[in-house]
Length: 403
Image (cartoon, rainbow, N blue to C red):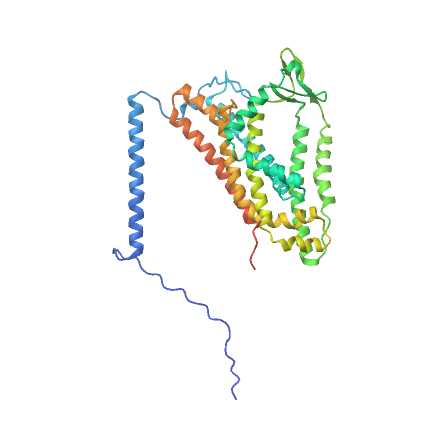
């Protein structure tokens, strides 16, 4: 009697042999390579002709080319800037950098505020309160149908109609609203504050790592360690200790009316505030529809199952519905973030000096329009690609993993 046992291990499949490339028009791969080479050659020839023709025309008109102008003194007055800037000393390169920072400032703040406002409005459209649902619906349908440029001009004109500084509206005793902008108290920034901010950033990272460990521990043992004590220690106590170790400085500069304007404090100019308000209000209307559609994409049974477990309506929305809706919300939300960043270029219409405004002034003074337009295109291309990469990473992170 034979005791031989058949080997039941699967035999690995052999890969099909690769077909050799034949130098024949009948070979599909050869034809594809030829067509690609021809297309690249035609595009390269067109670009070579356009660049050569442009250089010849510029040389015939004695127009300088290149980016050497970036090292010349700009002399462009810029009303507001997060970076130190002196028009009588700083170069065109510095002025353009200030414009880039202004664009990033209004874009990033606008994205955050538009997301918050749009989410609240989108949830409000699904509210059981009839009045709230109708008001949010009117908000969405009205603001989406009015061009953004008109909204920016409306907000800017409205802010220009505020009283002058001598009759400014007082918000307490340290903040004022006038046609010169919103003036707020300003903290004197010192190394202790930098250390506290760095400690807070480290605390955010530590809290995220601890929360990840807590989820892994819960998956393994069924018991989830508490996260909030660690978060409180890292996000609150650690920054306070860093601030106190360096002397705990706390000095606030309060704005004071002197002459025809305020001195000191932090001033949000009407141009900046009108641009930010217009971008946020306009983009939030689109974000609201994205959020509403994402929530409605979740089956009704998810609501009923969560409510059957005893969760309140707000808890169901926060813990069950929105985490699932994010997978529907994030892709179209990326487009709205890109639109907000690109729509910030309309700032030139109301006098806010972003990269478009500064670059326009630069090319008018230097006559180098091609380089100026190239700088604007490079800036917006970089911003758009950065937003897309981040949102694609986040979308992949929250995507469902198939088992």
